[in-house]
Every structure is written in C-alpha cells, then in structure tokens.
Image 1: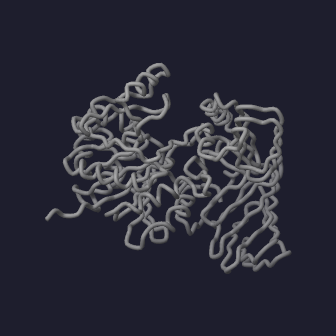
Image 2: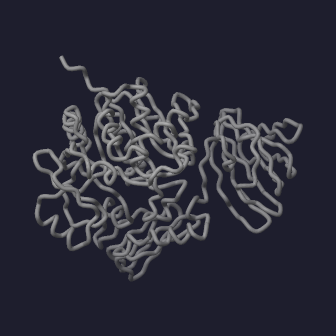
Length: 480
C-alpha cells in the first residue's frame, strides 16, 4: 500500500501590484485587496491552500513589512493540526529564490519525498472543486518525478501571460509573454494554454533541477535558510532569511531558471475559473455590471456614464457623460484612467516610487502588529494621527530625537510609560512626551484604545525612532 502524500502548501506573496495603484501599495499590495465578497485575495489563497487534502503545513514566502497583515488574514483559516510558517526575504529576488528557500526548509522538516503545491497570493479561483481535482492530477504527476505547471484554457488573446503547449500531460513548448499578434495566433490555434504560475513537485526533484540549472541560487538559499533567525508569532514560526547570503542572489523567475530547461516538465490543463486580477480592467470584469455596462463598487450618482468602473470606500463619486473610464477614489489619492490604458497605471506607481512619494508605499491608514494609525494631517513641523491599539497590544519602547508628542485618549484607557513614570490615562485625559524621552503606549485592557497623537518638531518623519524593546520581535527600526 502506497504511503499517503505529505503535501505542503506554499504561498508566494511578493510584488507591489503596481497596476492596481492607488489601492495596491508597497506595504499593502494586491493580495490584500478585497474581492466583491469582501474577502481578500490572500485570505482566499490561504483557505484554498489549507483545504487541500493531505496538507500538513502552510508555508508563506514574503517579506518583513507584510508579516503581521498576513498573519491577521491567514492564521484564522489554518486547521488546528496544520503548521504555519513564514519565510521572510530581506529583499525580493523573484520566484526561483523563493521556491529554492522553501524547498530547503521543507526538506529539513518533512524530508525529500514531501510534495510542494506552490500558489500565488493574488490569484482568484472561482471553481474550488475543479481546482482540487487539478491539484490531485498534479500530485499524481509529481509522484512520477515531474515538475508540474497548470495550464488555463484562454478565452482571449492576452499579452500579460506566458503560454504553454501541452501534449499528453507534458509541456512541449513554453512561450513567454507574446506580442498581440502572436497571442492572437496562439489562442486561435487551440493548442496553447495560459501559464497560471502555480507549480507542484517533489522537493527532491526540484532540488535536483535547481542544482543542475542554477546551483549558485541553490547554495545561497541553503545558507540563508540554515542561518535564518527564528521567532514565534502565536502558533506560527517565523524565519528571517540571512541577508548576507540572500541579498546577492540572481533575480530570475522559476520559469526562466528551471521550467523552460528541465526535461521533467509536465502540466495539467484545467478550467478552474482562474483570474490573475492584474489590472483595474481585469478587476472590473469580476463585478456585476448595470444596464449601461458600468461596474460599481462605490456610492455613485451617474448621468449618461457608460462602460466604466467606479471604486470608492468612503466618498460619493459623481460622473457625467463619461465612457470607458476607471475612477478609483482612496482617502489620499484618486486615479482616473482610460480602460484601454489600464496596464499603464504601473507608470504612475513607478513615477511615485522614483519621487519617494508616500502614496506608493502606504495608505493613510497603516496597519501595525499592535493595531493601526491613520494620518489625519501633516505639515513641515507637525503631524496629527489617529492611533488604534488592539486589546492586549503594545507599541515598542521608543524615543524620538526631533519631535515631541501629545497624546489624548478619546476611547478606552491607556497604560503609558513616559520617561521615568508609568501612567494610566483615561478617556478625555492626555500626556505630553518630550523629544528624547523613552515612552511606550500599551492597552492591557479588553476594549480597543483610540488616541489622537499630535507630533511637533523640526522633523516628523516615520524614521525618527530609536527602539529599545519590542514584543513583536522586530529587529530593525521600522516605524512604531
């Protein structure tokens, strides 16, 4: 009798989702965007991964900045008998490095015969039963020492995806993202499938192929995993890959590095309701449309508006006589784009990143492991924030060189360390913290704590912080 397959689900969560700016940003990227049912893409991916038969562990490859947001989304869906592990990259190095690190870790814990099912954090799959059946086929092929991709039957020419030619479950040809004319020919032929960017393989087989085609990456990631720092985050294990061995790794995708070269490439052709959701045009297609062809995720007042997408969480959008537009409203940025140019939204993100504009990185509301803060107003010599601290949570013990802070409690009760004093601050009470004084804000109670913080000084940037203690194991001077 064959031993049941030990399956480890691996979710890769990297990239900025720049074509979905201003909703997607560097520290709140595409996987955290909610779909029409109000579930985020990463939560859907975690539910999908945890539900796979035989899945004993969920391993997430991501980065330090996303850890606590990821844990908030993923931890609630993990079964009690499943492990949860995070591999944190010090710098993004594409999918080959991510998969190689995962392979090393999984072999060390589960052995060479463990099977990996590698998923993306930001895909939408509508037919979960068909997906489970496709994974079963892939697991069977991987047991025969194949590296298995997933092919999606295309319903239109698409220049943003790679293509696979599949013959008798084997990949006979890989084609990278084609030009429009070639994409039309590939779809018309009926012989090609979109490359879904999901993979299934035995750990030992992928290690063998990495050793043949990119041994330097394999060796560097082995050292990065072996020398990783470890902390516990509730029931999860967090491994921070050693930067000195990871930072100089070649930036290359697993398709280029291995899949297009290996003699063990197989694929499962499937129809699983797969969507990459890679642009505002693609996201708009998921929503229901009104009689004028508009997709609406906002409060709107429209007159002669057609074939457009309106997105806002807070403010009403009014539109008159517009057609084929994308209008996205967030508290600190608005996007107006022609639908036909939705792929070029990345150019706006790129320009903002080059300017180091804060809207490429953060939303006004920024999530931290202890809660969140919202920037209400900012100028050269002051900043006003609304800070929410979760029950039982605490900010780091810290000080600031250039700014002082005035805290006013508007909801709940705060436990405050202010220099050499420990204070209990109730609703409608306040405390003033001088520049240079060590201080900490905590909420040891069962109700949410909300304060208004007014910062004043010569410099009010988030990087003016010296941290002394932190209950969340953050080893670098990240904001608060």
